[in-house]
Image 1 (cartoon, one colour):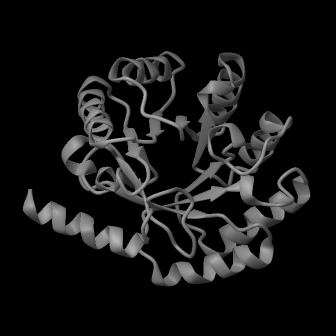
Image 2 (cartoon, rainbow, N blue to C red):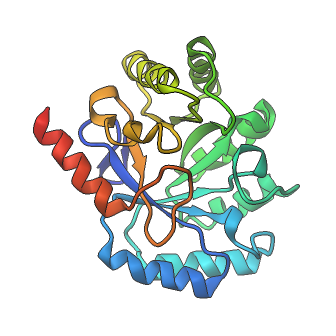
Image 3 (cartoon, one colour):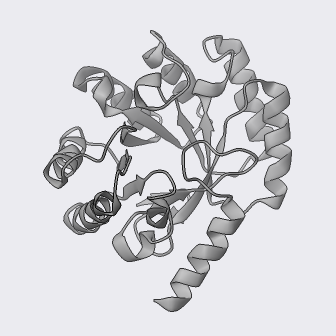
Length: 247
């Protein structure tokens, strides 16, 4: 699968750097720092943005991003508090619709646990605007069974998502190994790119071995981390290159 000229399914995992600013001043600072950061795509975590429910303010912030990095592949994510995010909102669909209609984004992350009907509505609108949809599921309390994780991917396929994402919390090394096994099997089974991670320090290895096990994207921080176990994008890039040389 290609997003612009970036192939997600094969080769080195692509590095995604999150922007988690709460206002335009912080956003400008994060964008300025990107000149010293290696990345393949950027994730704008709009759940951290204080004025996310004010359409004009959100559009103004989007314009700032596009002015600073006009050619970057931009993923937009509203991570709800239910899956480790920063906010809840009753305007989940409306916020996404406004950003999709701007024709300034390339990918959108939709929590498929929001419900089939809502997910399908957003996916339909996204595809009308030629925007790819990541179906995501995050469990910050545990690692589900291997059967449950594969069923999660099957549901994402049934919903016709373009990319599948699963992030889980390990309690022991067996959980980490289970996530890696399911990543490998899902990458073999599905044509769609798969993104997985086992969070925290215990699961850190999963962020570095995507080329071997089949996770297409890994997340590294710019100024600030957006999830437990996330290291800087530059460190991650060096680590991925070292892993690649050893394969």
